Length: 226
Ligand SMILES: Nc1ncnc2c1ncn2[C@@H]1O[C@H](COP(=O)(O)OP(=O)(O)OP(=O)(O)O)[C@@H](O)[C@H]1O
Ligand SMILES: [Mg+2]
Image (cartoon, rainbow, N blue to C red; front, side):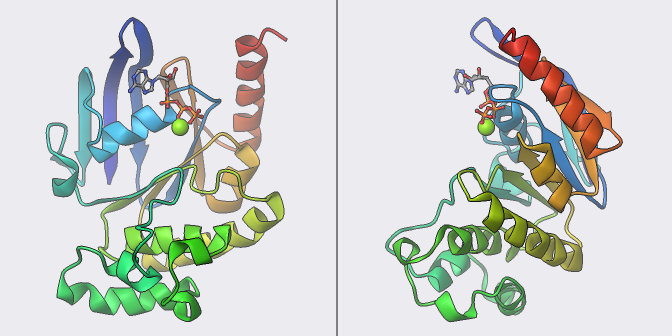
């Protein structure tokens, strides 16, 4: 599915990624790291929004490293729901889609419980529904992999606990591989099958969310010298 191999990225003299490698197979994988650890940079390189200084990105065995985002067939859910404010939920989800994506549209809308808000505009939606609409928009084109960059940032923890198992059910039913970025190992646990931690420019696979929690905790203590 996804193979990112030896990715390097510097911004000026700051090294953000140093030989960062990660694989996502038929699974929901969480990539966990503290603020500024390079999570979004890594995801943007996979999506084709940012160019790496070195390394390779393969999607379904195809080397897409030099390709622009539209040729990669990835779904991307950014940190803040990026919906067009002047369009309804329905038009947002269908924006730029081919006519034959209609079947998937009906299925995804129903699965995410968006039927009753299709005529509304983003400013009329609660945070939870904005996130659902944003996810629907990324899923309807049937991406080969879905990339989610802390899509629930700022959301109440009670709402997260309701929405994440819902997202998991939908993603599993559609059988789409997912790379889910978060700084919160507990959030990762509600959604994911497997976990990796990004720290000091490198990515480490871990077996449990608890192991991720311990690594993150150590990173925080080191970063803030407390
Ligand atoms: N376009 C850019 N130009 C210069 N520096 C950048 C740029 N984008 C990111 N950085 C820097 O690279 C580092 C990693 O940023 P990145 O956004 O990937 O981290 P993150 O783990 O997603 O952080 P957060 O948890 O705050 O979202 C940070 O120090 C950031 O300031
Ligand atoms: Mg980020």
